[in-house]
Length: 344
Image (cartoon, rainbow, N blue to C red; front, side):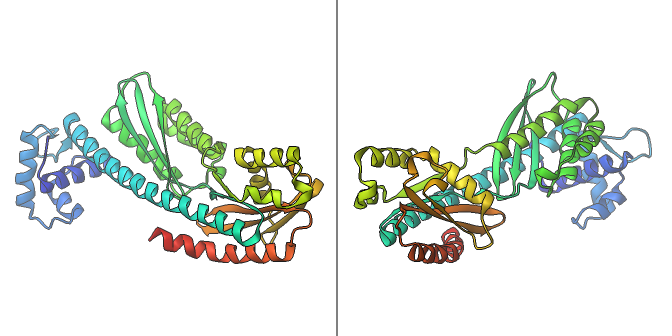
């Protein structure tokens, strides 16, 4: 069912007001509640049309109006349609930004390898703190709910949550209000057991759905699937006699290209970064076994909004540390501005 914009705004105002107060809603209340600037007489005419369409009803004579199930359904479908469009637009925008960021990081890795004549690596940024921006629950079918969870940095994840029976429009709306009122803007690590229990109590028979939403949010934070590592200059390793032994070089290049081993360098660098943001691992200090004859200098870059990543230069123990540190410091300063320019 399609409604004229004015009728939809009046229906929305009736439903929101009724959800807040539990009392039938009159035309005078609506005239104060909306920005339509309509007279009470005009609002009464529109309400009469909505009643005739079966979207609102008058519980008893002289009372205001309350929404019917059909009214709730139209309201929720309209609300979810708008939210879905916003989420899809956000996804499209983020994919474009992600492509631009990936291209930027690859260029930085190549530039570092050329300028230093060593091997280079750079990780995609990870979120240092994960705040919940919003959660949207919607009914997929009688047995499943779709949970869209948006975290700080506009990281979006979808989870399908099974349910024993479909939820009514009012139940779904109340769950969305409950979750977002309590969780929006809150870092996940600050969600306490006490808060979870309080939300469960308010959720009544829908405690399992709340549980599943929390599990999904925690799983997103634990997941490392978004960590990408871009490398360049692996062949530079052969330029140094102490690393040019075929077996040694093959092991180093294999770890370098597979990138799994490099993630330990990234994680250690992010966890242990000093005030300067620079870390130096020499020989046996290396967290990767195949690189014990190498040195690695890493820097932590910060793009803002809690987004941090690692830049690294890998070379022989006799690398030019002073030059490498200088190059990394320059990149640390330039990368946030390059990222900002690349987004626009």
